[in-house]
Image 1 (cartoon, rainbow, N blue to C red):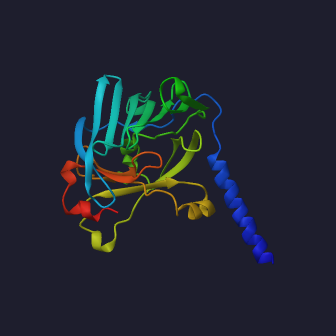
Image 2: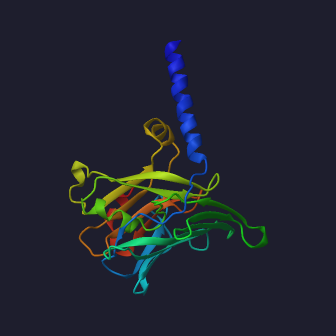
Image 3: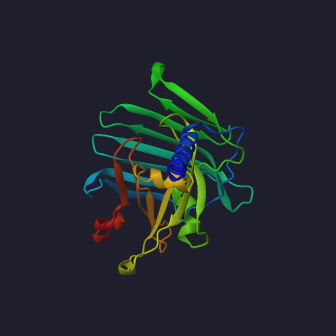
Length: 271
């Protein structure tokens, strides 16, 4: 009976932790505390969207550009031809140290397979407000939360955020993302490099895997329904992003977005 009670207590603790993750977070005014490296190259990277069976389903692109000397914009588009698609953008400016970038704004817009606008996810680091907007026009519903002081929210520029992992100067990168499903909330995320298997020694790419951190007990329980989130990099080139695996939109299918130059036998090895 004592063992049963302990199991029930552990399960209750896990459920309570999961419920706390679903609750809104945030308090004081924010300015991003993240410092991201400058891109080593700018321009547009042609890519394509593939389903989990590795079948090409649509176009994609990653663009990094300088809008003016103090503003860098990143734009990622992916989707299914004639169907669902997502556009995500981030704007960054020079940090006070003169060597890195800090986030100003992030935004993500998605459309479902029927062309219905799924809303807008928006993060304004200068005002300290993040929001989730469902629908459009007069019927739009907007929910806001206040970002914590010195926020570490990074939904979009993960190709820059993960550079310390790619270069081997960090073992883990911890940050937060804004999610809109079940209400606007911030979720803690941990990222790490996936070790190469022995029979994969010739693979030049670095895979960074990232997942929500709910605490050990809840994370093990949640792995059954969490999506597989990974980004691949080629550390030999100036713009190292190669591919990423992510849900196309909230509750949408998981897809691979792969740069054109990376096509070949490697694509078939993606998991």
